[in-house]
Image 1 (tube, protein in one colour):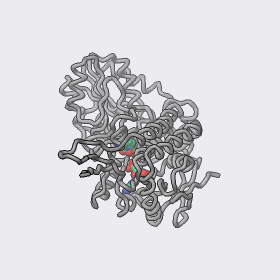
Image 2 (image 1 turned 90 degrees about the vertical axis):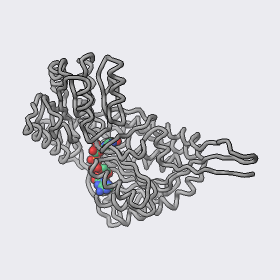
Image 3 (image 1 turned 60 degrees about the vertical axis):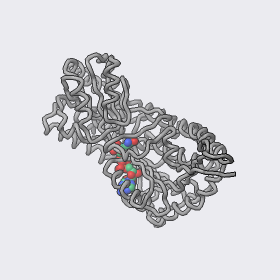
Image 4 (image 1 turned 180 degrees about the vertical axis):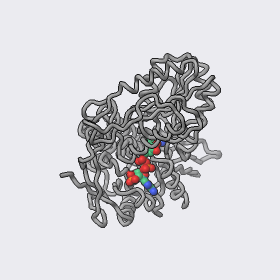
Length: 483
Ligand code: NDP
């Protein structure tokens, strides 16, 4: 029997307005129902936003260090529950234990980081242009924040939205992805236990297409932060800004890794392989295009094919290198792109098949897949697959490599593999992305520096993480005093 979980509204765990629920399944064993959650309605959205709006002024009035103490305690409680959170993450989303462990740790670290920020984040004092006058600024919370999060980093992404929103005195309504809501429930549980006043955080589950619109366009919501697909994010942005809300949407990617002749090719294979097949390719920053100089092309393709073929695929709890895709529909999407690439004339060099026999019979498994001889105009080189599929594109020089890397509607993360300082520096200046890595994989982010994309990867309104996260959730008031 799976456990049924409630929404959290106004400090109480409550069923949805009409009592409907939905199930969450284990992607490694699809017969296994992990949990049941509330299928919320617009009435639930209204109640959650009302609770947030009522609680927000008192929360904002609480001194920053006191808010920070609650966030710190939340981080401690998450740390105490770390092992069980790792297991939940794996059984709900499919990441391996080795991948889920640092993600949970990251959420813990984010709460500790913003706990300290709550103490020292505020305005500045400036010289006034007159005697007996002062001039200073104060950072004030935006008000009620609506947070909509995806399933692929089901604890890290919610943490990097929740912690800065709360640290700066906002109240929150958060709606996690329906594929993996349990980690957000766990954070909310810890916040509650840590002493967060009732109504400051509200947790609603349910279909994004049913309650997402009403939430992000609600009259009493002031600020919206979304991470997910470009298709949904674009709509969320339009709905949010229509009546003047501040909004930030982080969306898809088609991230390139450029391999140049001076690179150590064995190392390049490791870096690109980790970026392409880590977390089953289900990262917005996953490497999905390897753009390789012709001088090292054959050596790189041979290496990356070996790398892909050595990866063990299986249940993330059983020590496999790569887990399943999160759902049947995500797996179908990947298999469709594998067919499309073959129809387009790309050369299937490794993988390409669903795994559905023996130990794989009950999960959403696919082989790590490499396509070689890909051309930049092909759909496999342009569209986000969101599975473990790498397109390898040959190029003849540095300028062509940059041009192919920039030939994308997305612009999230990019990497260059080179031993040349000049190439590294020129690449970092010429690439059209929000994140650039030199001799590092496109995935993996530090929590205290800005993160976000350009082009279709982001609304490019505000960055997330670090101080940028605090800026997004606050507005600046300028105070002129003549005393
Ligand atoms: P989706 O866009 O499908 O869903 C994201 C969230 O939006 C979910 O909570 C979903 O709810 C909700 N939602 C769905 N429809 C609507 C709607 N009409 N209005 C408001 N909310 C809605 O993305 P995925 O969860 O599939 O996540 C994968 C995507 O996220 C990939 O494209 C990936 O690149 C991107 N991503 C981007 C990152 C970045 O920082 N740039 C980081 C991580 C992922 P429900 O689950 O109920 O459908």
